[in-house]
Length: 301
Image (cartoon, rainbow, N blue to C red; front, side, top):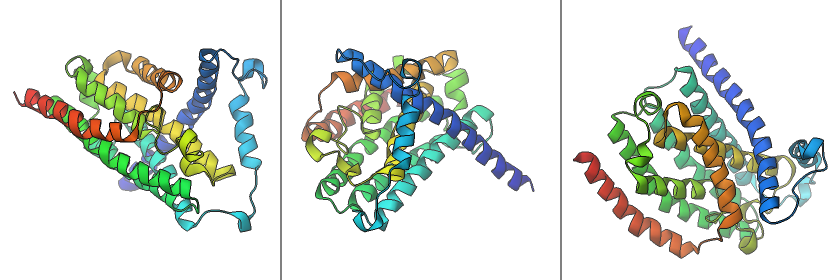
């Protein structure tokens, strides 16, 4: 009976977290379009609702009511598996987010965070590979190899921070250990590079390089599947902004720095050009590994 209640409590906290994050995602998309519009000297959405506040909900309605006949579907069962897996992983992020605030959960939530993160590459690989489209296939291959490149450094960063804190719980980051970014500024920089690549954001959006791959892995998707891919991508950005604030800032200003990370995503998209793929892979395997090895020695000392 206790186990059943605990399971229901976990599902309820994850569901509430999912709803809260998705509402924030709707206004995050609107805010991003507004900021990009003004940074490119044009107006963003301003017609639907007051000052365009309902634009995201109008776009959601437009995507949901679109329909594609089954005989013209350019996807296989593998593509649906990738979409379902991405939605499941997004719900897993929401569960970790909700349990961190309720004080209830497993003994090593940071380990579960790494597990969920490592499975994201498989979902993107299935989404692109399951489409009968050469651009989507090329996008999935680049995404899979890119995930191998940054996931190794990504895991090392989290393990390094856990060694410094002394455990794999979120509580020490929030209550006892603050401003970790000032101890390891280079590691913090690698984390920012890693989350940009993990979330497929400029300048490391190799899975969805519109100028090179005709929208990449989501070329053959419309209505509900495209909505799931699009919404889950922004949900992961919000969750990773919060995780970055927990790991590197902590304390009472944690939510402020989570918003700073969200603004960082928008600023990078509006400012930086896309980095060449071989340059990124070379950087992650040469310079990033040296920085992490040096940081490991500092923690051991």
